[in-house]
Length: 278
Image 1: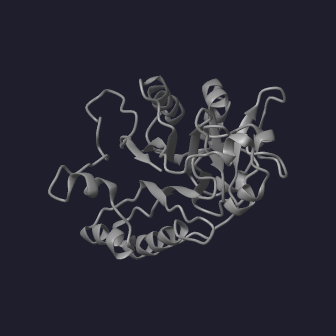
Image 2: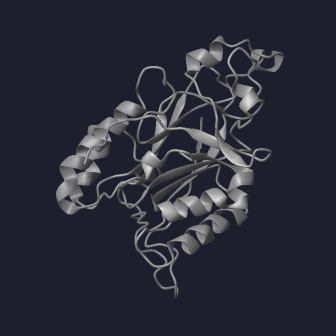
């Protein structure tokens, strides 16, 4: 089905108060209107920033979802190149609560909707976005109205997100530009192609909406299970990163069913890492 857009928030863990606290976010215009620090006045806008993204459907319905989710997270954080952005799909309420209590999540990541129960009420699972606090500004004081932009080399939070699991970020090298990160889990049944077509159109509008002129990246579980799904990206003037890199004749890039040979698979899907520059 097609969901309506609503307010989403990102939070950082406040160690002194031992609670998750929302991080203020505003539009790119508001960020630029702030008094820029001497460092930010001399920003070289010709430079690019590299980020890594890893989306993963962690499978809500197989046994031991909490243990599997924490195993997946440890695998990602313990790797030699921990991703800057993690998009999770099929996050159950129990898994969500466990990840929010995880010391490593609290210490190193910013998380969507930590205090918003509406994102999980009445549904078996939801999406969850986690951003590295080493790459994204999490200091609440660094984004107060009227202050300087103190993010240094980190990305700042930009447009207020309304619906889906989209987050606006502002590159440190281009403070007037907002780039969208959109975490999706589209309808999964074979007869719901019309719903997925509407969802893709809405997603294309999200990365092109006024105030967010930097474009964006949409990732997650598209459930592209019919031949007609392949045309939805082109119909909405989006670029399929896998096809751009490997062409349609290249390897399929399937992430479903991978890893089933192990005794207790982490998920019926597998994560696919993407590195991109802004």
